[in-house]
Image (cartoon, rainbow over all chains, first blue to last red; front, side):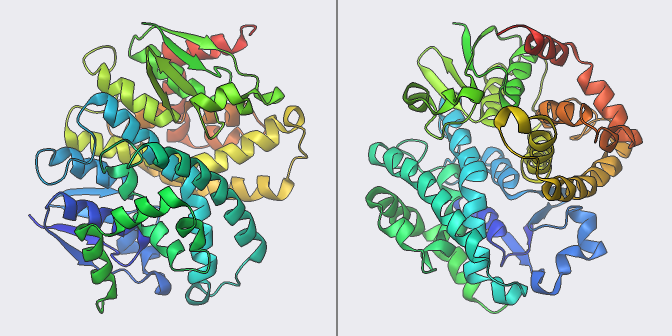
Length: 214
Length: 214
């Protein structure tokens, strides 16, 4: 059964796609045009009642929330592809800790910067300069802690690539491609970590898919 | 080894404490006075570099982020106490989905309402009436989806109590105790769900601990 991923062009769906690629799970993509508001259509809301991207269908199993989907496939195919949860319960605890740090401390600032620096025009909003400034200041503090962490560990959860690193890929990629790319590049260990994780074949494949015509 | 929970009076630490209680894991609490800024002290920042509550110490294992800690103990003591992750990988997927819904869709609105309606004075901030209004409107939409979900399932992830329900306890308790308590009480199925989960002995124990002098 090929997994269906809805909304492949959206950042959060890319988390799912890079995870499925690392786990060697075959998938197909079903475009949802968020610029035309298709994620609020009644048919889509039957799959994802909150009207956000992504959702997956795997036979008669439907699941949403990108980080939940990543956990599901990492556990379902534990012995297939790259181990993304750590080898022990204690390692998984640290993976979960940094996955939560991404969700709670990194994401909202990275999201605000991405939306207001890259996607204001297609979403028809005026860039909020105050929000950009505040988000940058908050993200700097978070990235200073990452710098310290990554000076002692190759990856966020330890010496192994995990869901915690993976979950940062889509929005860090956005930031690197804005005028605020120095937030990543000017931090020695964050920059080395970014170069490592963004050069994985799985992420390169997702980036290539993003360039392909819908 | 008794688990040490730092910052027991804070809402997010209560998630951890109710989880440890359901899993029958012994713990002791170490007060951190956030009103005096003790969560920003250098000694605390060594344990939790982002300066937020809670963190646990279990022998030489240190872990932060409340939802990560809940997952860790639910997995470590899988066969002890109440099963909180579902019985199958598919059930766990749905638990994770609703745990993410709590973190991504419910939490920020519930947090804003709680801070500005209950804790503005001790934190020395002026209640932001516009933010209260916006947060209520957003939370209403989220709770309408919960109402639909809970009309067909006793609990968020299905017919079993799980981490997904548990994670809602601290901030729903705050909201019920504000002038906005009707958000919960006026929705038939959300209200029945709240009555069920808030009457579990584990939550009652945590509420009693909160009333005790520090």
